[in-house]
Image (cartoon, rainbow, N blue to C red; front, side):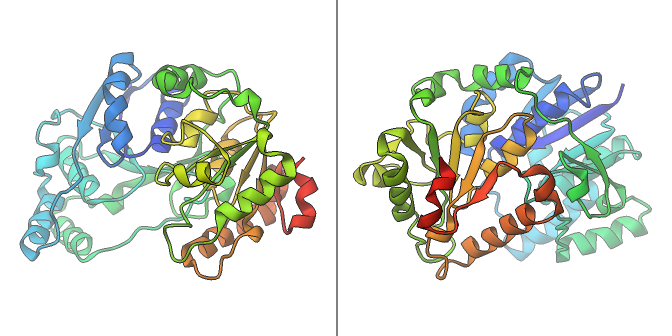
Length: 361
């Protein structure tokens, strides 16, 4: 039996972690280290641990770690080499066969160095975080380059040389150097839905989604990435067309729901909860998801065997002043207009103008 350690920083990573445990690694020892990268995870961490989802569950603090000074950067290089980082001080000295993570951050390098001393045959693997995360964005810093050279001179395998697998739902989308391993799609009557309902039951029961056929998922581009894109105006146009009483707005967790309430729109009381956790815990196959730029809507729907219709309304917004929004649109267009989109995105539409609103119905 192999021992695998999964590093989890976000809700979507937690969902993928659970799916891996339920499917590919159901017979292995599966340990999870949950970080404080996302505030909400700290809130549900005791429940995750209490439910016994994983063989071992740990909580690590990575926020507010000061690494900007020259002295701290030099210290980090040593940690990359010897694995003696305070973040992992209380982590058990146990043999691990594979660490699985998304972001190749400082703590991943130091964890690998720590575990390598126990098991030199350990491998390091990555996993996807949504449909737009399939690139091998291995950013080489001065720290990692220096640690790579020193570990090589000491005959210690660097993290990069132990890289092995990339776990994803659609291996055909991955063009990187790792070995793509397919994660089974999430079935509609799966154990995953029951687990998520247990985790978020007290939070999500306040909204009756059956009252609203249309669910609008907003983005962050009215307040991040550049100038405002006027997303709220686009949502109001859709609400006028489908009937305001039939539409509810699920605001982004970092957005202010009050601005949608002031505009006269129905707002989901669960807006502080990531949409991934809500959609996978309930059946939305008869609903229509409307969004300007949400990659979550597309990513989660593509993991399900029975997913809702998705309508992108970014052409109704003002992209010119927001570079980040433009980049997201380019990514979405590349996916849905390519071979992959023609094969898997049959329920994904783009509303090019107000005259095409009837496509939403």
